Image 1 (cartoon, rainbow, N blue to C red):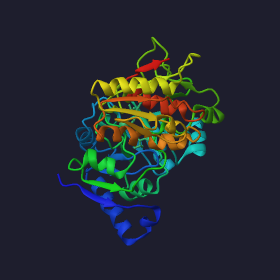
Image 2: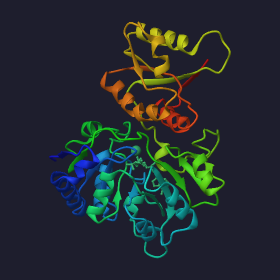
Image 3: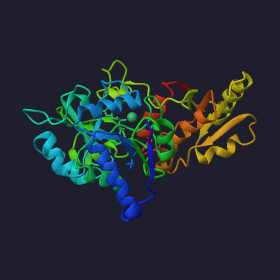
Image 4: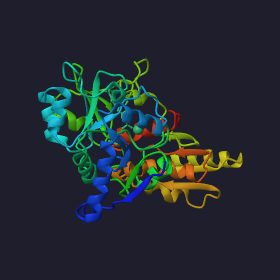
Length: 363
Ligand code: TXA
Ligand code: MG
């Protein structure tokens, strides 16, 4: 398939004639059951008409995604949530007032009677994930299409989520009808997912909106025990959290300092990296900007600066591109510092731990 790649770099571009015609073209593709990759404030999404079964199936094919892993339905009017759920509960109302449009996905029950969103989109579940993105291009596309748009992240299954148009082109050129390239996204981590179908609201995937912020609006909010890393807990409730996601091709180990050994975290990372390099492996270190100078002068070990520990927005924004860069550079062995920062640390480490297949070296 020939993929049409359209550049639409900023909000102003939407106001131009060319920008408007890109959105018209993309909306038309969605209406006739095709696939359009588009930017959101979190990561790029791969969109199709959420109620069109054949279109939803195409998403799974293009990504190589297991068909039991449900898609998120993207909306551009609160009334669309009511159409899906049959009503707006007080919790939905409170959350949408506080966080929509924005990086929050709500899991809700479908309305009684004939469900609106087909099983092809929900991965066979009776519940649906709904999100109202704030990105102006995402909004314009949903409105223009006149549909709700089902969209997972626009990466090949198993690769880090795409945070630039270039990442999407690398993964999906030739597999989808259109890619709207809008450069880098704002946040860089996928939306926070909150499940509203149980007794107590539960975070199924940590993201930019934290559990504390959700609690301020809702009162008690739990974290899925499997995501919290509690041993012996049931599998994660979000099917997608069960897969080994975000995996770079290299073996990645996260090094954490837990003891008062004299050896510093950085000394240990350097020793491990040199040992791997001497074995002939292409070796990398991922570190916070504040520590980058401690790794200077290492020969044949590549150092990736992920951003300032003091600015976790920056680390969140760079995480997936650094993992992709490691692949591009042919890295085989990676040692990473831990980035358990106060606000976004939970979400960042959730992604990094999955990329590492939970390989942690505690010293
Ligand atoms: O920020 C985001 O959420 C991005 C952008 C494109 O909006 N989308 C995204 O989609 O990250 P995806 O497919 O990569 O992740 C969706 C997650 C998966 O873990 C999936 O299993 C979960 O949402 N999910 C979807 N529907 C669900 C449901 N009914 N119950 C539980 N988990 C659900
Ligand atoms: Mg994904």
